[in-house]
Image 1 (cartoon, rainbow over the protein chains, first blue to last red):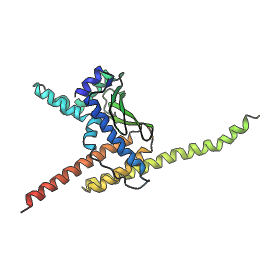
Image 2 (image 1 turned 30 degrees about the vertical axis):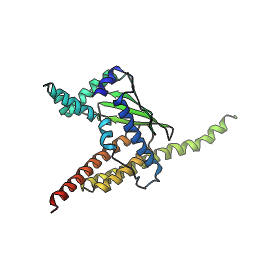
Image 3 (image 1 turned 180 degrees about the horizontal axis):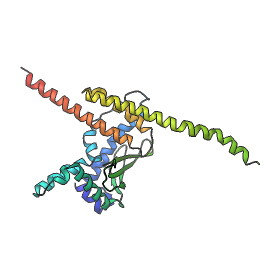
Length: 155
Length: 102
């Protein structure tokens, strides 16, 4: 939650939370490199334990859980985080605040990734037929493959 | 006049790109979709190990779609669900083994 609060105020983060996020991407890139090194049709062998925390970061579910706990601790309704539609609406409002402010997280002494940039790609008004309301692009440079990598998430 | 020849020689290449380019992308998508469908079936059948393998193969296919595509992220979400189910399952099995041990 601190990380998401910081995003509003700072374009560059180097603190513990930011380093933790870059570390997650470092492990993810290691996994993607392992996937890439296998031949087509061969099942990649990789340690998937990083997924437990990584998907929480990507899906912002860690932010959701912590915000929910915070609201409850202050005696406030947690409907915002408990209800799927309310949560997506909240994310849409939140990302409107940060949409012009790409966030750069800088890691330290990692093998595959040095920094990760988050950028809001699209925010839509809620509508019945829409397949998403918010689109965020997480991008980083793979040190081994020397290419810009992206993971685009929709909420 | 000299300008016409290069333009004509480009035509067959253009034809191949226009005709086979989309075919190649759609066949990639079809391979990815087949892996994902099969992985879902394995997940429903609680064959998490097979489901995990198929999602890993699907991620490799999705990675070939290129920058900015949503398929890698989508497949990773599925893989994460299977991984968590498999972890929960093996932790349940360990607990069961502990409680049934004499």
